[in-house]
Image 1 (cartoon, rainbow, N blue to C red):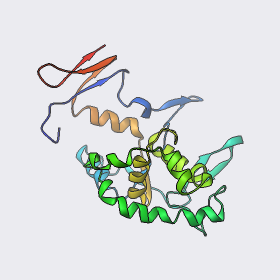
Image 2: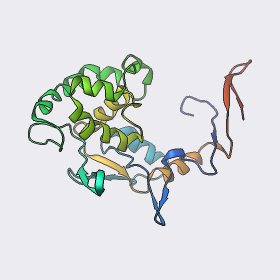
Image 3: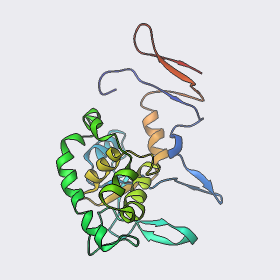
Length: 219
């Protein structure tokens, strides 16, 4: 819409939001992810102000977030990268030294991580987060920090998540407190869907280029 296009949202389910919608757990609606983002993320704040929900972003202090592990154990979920003073359980001292280079990589790749110009980062979309983190930082950094952080923000598995996506997440969180949506992602999806023409219960099986331009869907 910002570029002047007419937008119609097609949603397979009877409500917008997809995998970000709440799920029922023991009779309680629970968000499937933390919708983790940066408190200083100007684009997110601009989006929330545009739909009349400027106070929707809730900031979390260091140590406020946790991830569930085996046997119902809770482990701190840190937005900041590990270092020698703050090492998540499972990150070795040697790995904490290796991960220092992440800041240098983020600075080098900064021009490719602009969210409003996603095509710039295509050259970084060639490796999964898992492959890249193991190679550069070690298995401990991947399993105890990078993979849980990526999952909290994207609902995806490190083996399937692109390193580009993780680098963008880290660039946003670097130097900023983590934040999440007070009402959860489903409420945001519903608010956004009201701004465009929305058709629910539409299942597409195939999308092809139209003969006269645009796209055609079959379902």
